[in-house]
Amino acid sequence: MAREAGIYEVLWCPEKIGIERASDMIPYLEKGVEALKSDPERFKEFNPENGWGSYEGLLWFAIDTLVTCMGYPNASVSAHR
Image (cartoon, rainbow, N blue to C red; front, side, top):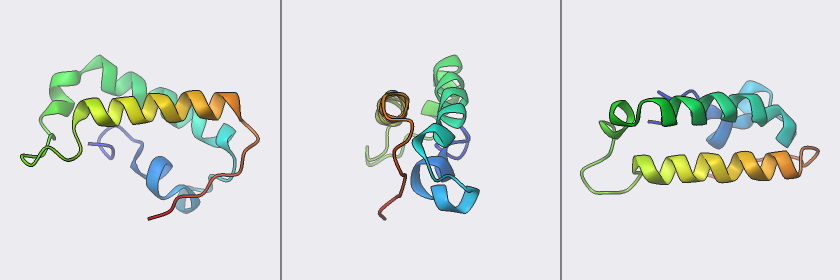
Protein backbone atom coordinates (compact mmCIF):
# COMPACT_ATOMS: atom_id res chain seq x y z
CA MET A 1 0.00 0.00 0.00
CA ALA A 2 2.77 2.43 0.93
CA ARG A 3 4.66 1.50 -2.23
CA GLU A 4 1.54 2.11 -4.31
CA ALA A 5 1.21 5.56 -2.69
CA GLY A 6 4.87 6.32 -3.44
CA ILE A 7 5.98 6.58 0.19
CA TYR A 8 7.44 3.19 1.11
CA GLU A 9 11.08 4.18 0.71
CA VAL A 10 10.43 7.59 2.24
CA LEU A 11 9.08 6.05 5.44
CA TRP A 12 11.13 2.87 5.78
CA CYS A 13 14.28 3.26 3.64
CA PRO A 14 14.93 7.02 3.36
CA GLU A 15 18.68 6.55 2.94
CA LYS A 16 18.09 4.59 -0.29
CA ILE A 17 16.59 7.66 -1.97
CA GLY A 18 18.94 10.26 -0.51
CA ILE A 19 16.74 11.59 2.28
CA GLU A 20 18.78 13.05 5.10
CA ARG A 21 16.56 15.76 6.61
CA ALA A 22 12.89 15.92 7.47
CA SER A 23 12.44 18.67 4.89
CA ASP A 24 13.49 16.15 2.20
CA MET A 25 10.50 13.98 3.10
CA ILE A 26 7.84 16.68 2.88
CA PRO A 27 7.20 16.70 -0.90
CA TYR A 28 6.98 12.91 -1.04
CA LEU A 29 4.66 12.73 1.95
CA GLU A 30 2.41 15.50 0.62
CA LYS A 31 1.96 13.57 -2.65
CA GLY A 32 1.51 10.27 -0.83
CA VAL A 33 -1.10 11.60 1.57
CA GLU A 34 -2.95 13.23 -1.32
CA ALA A 35 -2.91 9.93 -3.24
CA LEU A 36 -4.19 8.01 -0.20
CA LYS A 37 -6.97 10.52 0.44
CA SER A 38 -8.01 10.82 -3.21
CA ASP A 39 -8.79 7.13 -3.74
CA PRO A 40 -9.37 5.28 -0.46
CA GLU A 41 -11.08 2.30 -2.08
CA ARG A 42 -8.06 1.65 -4.31
CA PHE A 43 -5.74 1.57 -1.32
CA LYS A 44 -8.10 -0.38 0.93
CA GLU A 45 -7.74 -3.26 -1.52
CA PHE A 46 -4.25 -3.69 -0.03
CA ASN A 47 -5.58 -4.16 3.53
CA PRO A 48 -4.20 -7.50 4.74
CA GLU A 49 -6.59 -10.15 5.98
CA ASN A 50 -4.85 -10.26 9.38
CA GLY A 51 -5.58 -6.56 9.99
CA TRP A 52 -1.93 -5.52 10.37
CA GLY A 53 -1.23 -2.55 8.12
CA SER A 54 -4.61 -1.02 7.36
CA TYR A 55 -5.33 1.89 5.05
CA GLU A 56 -6.41 4.00 8.02
CA GLY A 57 -3.21 3.18 9.90
CA LEU A 58 -0.97 4.11 6.97
CA LEU A 59 -2.89 7.33 6.33
CA TRP A 60 -2.62 8.32 10.00
CA PHE A 61 1.10 7.46 10.09
CA ALA A 62 1.84 9.38 6.88
CA ILE A 63 -0.06 12.47 8.06
CA ASP A 64 1.56 12.34 11.50
CA THR A 65 5.02 12.00 9.94
CA LEU A 66 4.31 14.88 7.53
CA VAL A 67 3.18 17.17 10.35
CA THR A 68 6.26 16.27 12.37
CA CYS A 69 8.56 16.92 9.39
CA MET A 70 6.95 20.31 8.85
CA GLY A 71 7.47 21.16 12.49
CA TYR A 72 11.11 20.03 12.52
CA PRO A 73 12.36 20.42 8.94
CA ASN A 74 16.06 20.41 9.88
CA ALA A 75 15.86 17.16 11.88
CA SER A 76 18.05 14.28 10.74
CA VAL A 77 16.14 11.29 9.41
CA SER A 78 16.84 7.62 9.93
CA ALA A 79 14.71 4.50 9.88
CA HIS A 80 15.07 1.63 12.30
CA ARG A 81 13.91 -1.68 10.89
